[in-house]
Image (cartoon, rainbow, N blue to C red; front, side):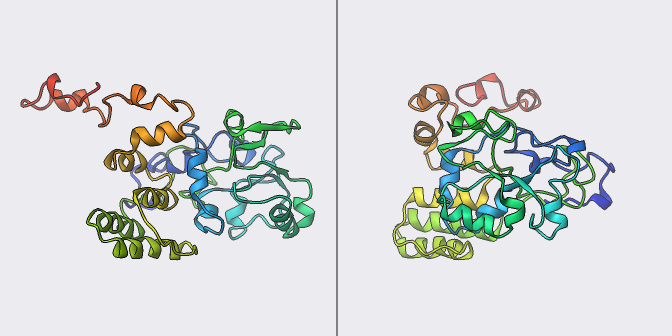
Length: 296
């Protein structure tokens, strides 16, 4: 779905807000932050789907943040500097779950020792650190996400051409992905798996992994495909449909959703389909309240 600031119906507010999701408050407009919405929380399960070496992790999450409260640095400096914060003092570093201290962390610091010497390391893992006031001691990931600066901001849809000048939830003009070539490979992998052709299913899955600079896998099931879809399609709005289509919605919520773990069937109930808007029912002479999807 194409967006173009030059031809927008309004000079402001004519875009979308996909860059704002999966990010809590990281700084107001005068702090050089980006507009955010903490509507969604990145789950540990999603983070752990990204294996070590998966290049998609760093293009999905902004792992480094300078001090955005002093007026000297901006979230958008990363893009102004060609996709790097080298040369900028980093206040917080959100290390991936698979980064091993001290080796991986020291290797990261050594890339820019002067500006990373005092960086607060906040692991994106089950045991992490408090990200706001730098209180000593370990806390859980579930506690960490209740603070401001509650994790690596989602950056896949950052629009560095417009949003660095406008602090807005509706001025992202990056094109929205309706379907991509890697997704077609994953769709084909799922189809081949269901047809009993594991060789072709693996070939399609491994082509996506090759692009992500990962080693091929030698076995496949629907969980392996769903894992790969997390890494490839994170933040693009397909997950609920994936889990419903594959009849994994209750199972995965029981396993990975800490808020309803063990009682997903009770919470989800019959709501395996989205509700039909009342306006759509009212506008259709052939429909009534009895046609509403189960559970609503």
